[in-house]
Every structure is written in structure tokens, then in C-alpha cells.
Image 1 (spheres, rainbow, N blue to C red):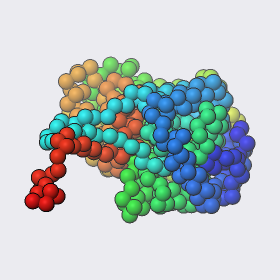
Image 2 (spheres, helix red, strand yellow):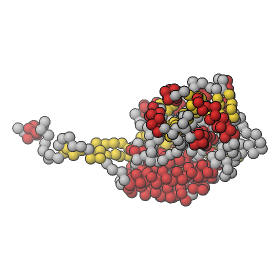
Image 3 (tube, helix red, strand yellow):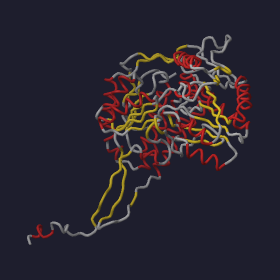
Image 4 (tube, rainbow, N blue to C red):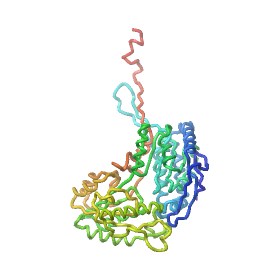
Length: 494
């Protein structure tokens, strides 16, 4: 495990804030106890970031020169991928198979945005008068990146890499439940030779470090991934500063299975969409709509297959469903299931902790399928962030579009059909930032990602992901060489 010191503006220091305890949710053992960042630590990191970002050795670098640092970070992540995966599994309870993939994704993200920096072009705009006109982009300055606990190394990379590629300094605040892999990333960034001060890792309480980063006058942008309520409060604070924000928030994503779907493909995709990562994913397909004509058959097969999923230790190769991130979170998921039962739902499978000595010390919860809840019930409207699926029937395209959109969230959607025109019609009609057809939870760093409605504001990833961390400037260069006619006679004395 990382030693527990914080990376404060390029210097490894003991934090002076509240104690943070990282636990291994498979058995409750302690990974590391560390002292988090205080406001004083954060202010020191900000001062060091300001100096580093303004230093000519950084701010005068051309984009392709900044790219070298991103490539070096990517190489460092790949070289230490096994260690990173182990740390993240210990910190979050995710399987090693998943955390290994997340480490590889993070390396790919840094390499991709290095390539974007290598190839960034500015725009010579169409000439509309007697001036050469162009559009250029410049760094915003200091960027705060606030990331969640469920996939930290990948989420960290998706914010840090484009912000550095754009020429900013970055202050990263990881979640207190999973602080360790961000500290490991700091070690790799340091070894890559990034000038000190340009990157900090400040685990700590949101009410202290989070508020400092949002409210401090020297922070030019906040990129936040997390809960909708926190994101909305952050946006209010940012509005008082007129500061841009990127908000990737919650979801209650629908998956839709039509009667012409390839059933085995749909079953596997639906299960992966909700039960992988133990359901702890903002894009989890947690509302399943099945055409009424196949509802009983499909749901029956789904329940049977779900009962065969392997619940187990995150280090076991065959594990499909690992423990939840924390015992408190496991208890919150259990309360949501109890709430659904109060509202009239019935449990088709799961709904409790698994039995047996292998599970008694861990934060495990069984993959759960609920039926009988109306689409406006709380279980179908609120984000559970656990392995809990609500199943509902639908009649036709209009019905399922209306039901899918009858939700405050708009992050993702899955559609299962062999009819491409139908998938196009429905996919365009659903309010969601991402739509998958005959697949689910597939990602590419080259493709923009974000949400609509209460699922957020802005987009990450893609070539334009760098521009989200830059300010656009228009430049006009006179081509006439003569005084402006409005004042020409006055200037000449005539």
C-alpha cells in the first residue's frame, strides 16, 4: 500500500486534516490509516500550483512538448499495472480482473490525450473584413478534479490527462473511501518528471477540501464526478464565481429488450450492465424494460442465470460479483431494497447478504431482481448504486420511450433488437448521453461521455475533451496598414 503521505504541490507531506481509514471490503481489514488534507494543506497546494503553472518552463511549452509528460505517465502506469490493480482492489473491493482493465484504461487515456496534444490545431476563421481572424485556445489555469470511489484510477485519468494536456495545473481530490490509488498515481506522475507543483493529490472531507477547491478564487474550473445532490450544490457555488464546471452525476439507466432481440445476447448484456462492478456504476442498467410478449420467458431465464453468478473474493479469478465498497454502502443498498418491498415490489432473487463463512466478514450483497414496482416507484426513480435491478413490461415503442424518459436522470440507455431502424428511432428518442445497441458498458476514450438532465453538464473524453479545460480566444490582425477611417482625419490633423 502507498505510505499514506499526501502529494501537496509536488512535495510528499503528512496531511494535517481528519483521519482516513481505507478498508478491504472483502474482510474489513485495514489497508492504510492516513491523515487527510486540511484546508491549510489545500491552500499550500494551490499556491504551489499557481507558481508552477505560471513558470515559463511549463507555460511556454508547446502542446507537443507537454505530450511527452503524458506519454511518460502512461508508460509508468503500464509498468506498474499489477500493483495499481492490487491497490485498487484492496481499496474498493473490485475484482482484480476489473481493476487490471481500469489500470490499462488509465494508461490509454494518458496516451490518447498525449496524442491529442501532439495534433491540436487552431482555427483560421473565415475572413469577413480587413483583418486576419483566428481562434486560439489557452489553459484555464488551476483545475480541481473531484473523483468518486467506484473506479478511481480511470476516473482520475479522464480528468487529469486532458487538463494537463491543455497546459493546466491539476489538484485531484479522490474520495475518502478509495484514496490510495490516487496517491500511487502521484508517485508515477512524479517519476514521469512532471514539474513539481503541477499536480497534487488531496484526499479529505468534501466539506473542507471540496469546498475549498470550489470556492477558492484561484481555481479556474472544477470537474466533478459523483452524486447529483453534491453536484447541484457545487454548481451553485461555482455560479457565484462564474466558474465553468463539468458535472458527471448519477443515473437510473434503462435497458430495453424488444421481442425480436437475440435473447442470449440480451441476457448476457443486461446482466453485465447491472451486476458487473457489483452494480456500483453510474451507468448501471438498473431499469429493465422487456416487451410484454416475451416478459415471462426473458425474466425467468434472467433470474435463473443471475442465481448462477459467482459471488466471491475479489482476488479469485472466477469471481463475477465482489463485495461492495464499504459496509455502510452495503447497508444503504439493503435499505433501498426494503423500501422497494414497502412500495409493493417483490424479490425474484437476491435481496440479502449471501450466507456462508466466505462472506460473513465482507460487505457482500447478492445480485437482486425486483418485479412488480411501478415505474414511478422510488426503486425505479432513485439511484441505488448496487446490484439491484427492477424489471418492468412495456407494450410498444411509444410506451417504452415514455417510460424510459419518465425519470430525472439521463445518463445511458441500452437497446436490444435486431431491427436497426427501430434501434435508431428509439435511441434518438431517449434522453441519455450514451446509447448502446446490442451491447452495454463499452467505452472508448475517443468518444464523448456525459449526461443529460440530472445526470450532469458537459462532456468528457474525445478530442474535444481537451478544449473543456481551455479558454477560447479570438485574434484579429489588421491587413490594411492604414488608420481606421473613423479617426483618420482627426489623427492627420485635417
